[in-house]
Amino acid sequence: MVVLETLLKIWHKQNNRCLLFTQSKQMLNILEGFLIKHNYSYLKMDGTTSIASRQGLVSKFNTDSSIFVFLLTTRVGGLGINLTGANRVLIFDPDWNPSTDMQARERAWRIGQTKNVTIYRLLTSGTIEEKIYHRQIFKQFLTNRVLQDPKQRRFFKSNDLHELFRYDDEHDSDDERTETSILLAGTNSEINLKENYNRRKRKRNAKFEGERVPNLSKIDSKITTNQQDVQNDIDKEKDDYVLSKLFKKSVVHSALQHDTIVDHSINDNVFIEAEAHRYAEEAVKALKKSAQECYSAESGIPNWGGRNILQ
Image 1 (cartoon, helix red, strand yellow):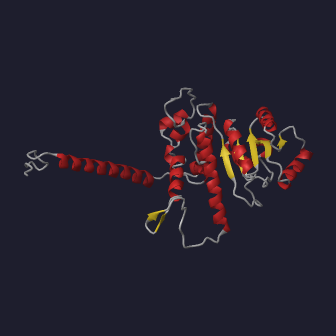
Image 2: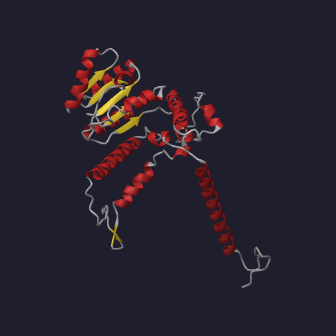
């Protein structure tokens, strides 16, 4: 709820509009009370909403920009409707069926959408929600293997695959990484917020004619005329800003890119290149260490060739 409060506060300031999905009507009522408490304008649709009034709610949300949040359950609001009035989608809790969440997230990302859509999934670390998400990923890989690439190799190791079907409430408080980020480490999906911040910090102090100028962002002789590229850069900066605010509150342990995980396919060449790179780094370190030991040796000490070093 702390993360939800932060996200809605930021999106409201940025004039973004949000689809808020949850799995149960009970959680939907809790979120409705949360929205009322914070004076956010919203619409609500669940299984008790009459069929006749549903299309009216959808049309009202798409046409009335003053409505900030559309509160829905994934099984009612996640199929067959067009909600292009929103450009932010937040899935509050995961469903056992990955197709349910996939249908829900694509309500805003449809024909007629003029803005870039950003989708957030919230998971509580160390709870059954992580296990549900792991099962989603596993089911998606099985689907891809059957329908797309039968030779696709999963990045799960045998012991990791066993962990998908066992719940363990033990959590190492000293380890800042979550179980999900550790399990999916081979996909390069984890977002390094500190690296992004340092990169932006370096950009603010760009060099001009060999000298670093404070607060100079960029020097470019080419003028960008593509409005879509400009908008993509702006949206990326906004997303980084949102993540920085969440990490600053110390309520978010890690952030992963879901599309990178789902679309990830590992072949033998990737493994070979990774192992070769690792061995090359170890060899370079060993060579540097050996060189330092040779330089620090005193005269008269036998070298690797068996001869004494003379002054």
